[in-house]
Image 1 (cartoon, protein in one colour):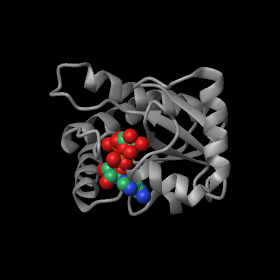
Image 2: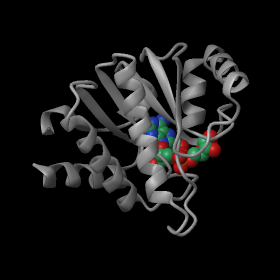
Image 3: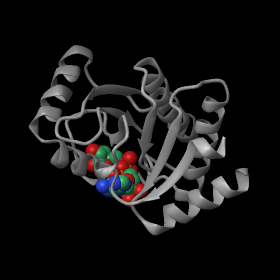
Image 4: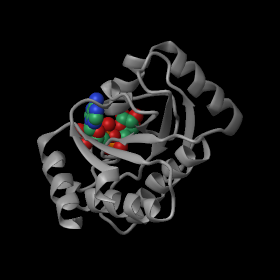
Length: 175
Ligand code: AR6
C-alpha cells in the first residue's frame, strides 16, 4: 500500500498527475484557497466546464464530487469535491469528508485514471481540524485502494508544513 500513496509538499496546480482534486464549494463556480489557485492556473476553460456541470446538475452538495476537463493545467482532469464546513463535529462532518474522498476516488476509477492528487480538503476556509482531517483522508484512501487497482498512485499535496508533517507521520505509521 505504501508504494501507492505519497506526500508532496507544494502547490497542487503544478502536479503532473492524471487528475487533481479541487476543494470546491457547492456552487462549483470557484472561490479562494486551492479552488482559486486551480482556476487561475487552469484558465477560463475550467470555469466554462464548471458552469456547464452546474447548469446540468445544479449545486454540488457536501460529500459529493464532479469531474471536468483541466484547461491549461498539467493534469488531464479536475475532480471538484465539496468537503464539509466544520461546525464542531456533530454535524456529520467526518462522514461527509470521507464521502468527498471516496466519491473522488470512484470518479478517478470510473474514468480509468492511474494517478490522483488530493489537497487537504476542508482544512482551510472550512475549518476542519487538520489532524482529524488527515486521518480520515489516509484511512479512506487506504480502504479504497485495498480492493482496486486504480488509481494506482495517490498523492496528498500539502501546501503547508503542518499538513505535510501530519500526513507523513500517518503514512509512516501505516508502514
Ligand atoms: N495547493 C495545494 N493545497 C493548497 C493550495 C495549493 N495551491 N492552496 C491552498 N491549499 P481551502 P476548504 C491548501 O481553503 O477548507 C474555497 O474558497 C490549504 O492550505 O482551499 O475545503 C472554496 O471555493 C488547506 O490546507 O479549502 C470553498 O468555498 C487546503 O488547501 C472553500 O474555500 C484546503 O483549504 C473550501 O474550503
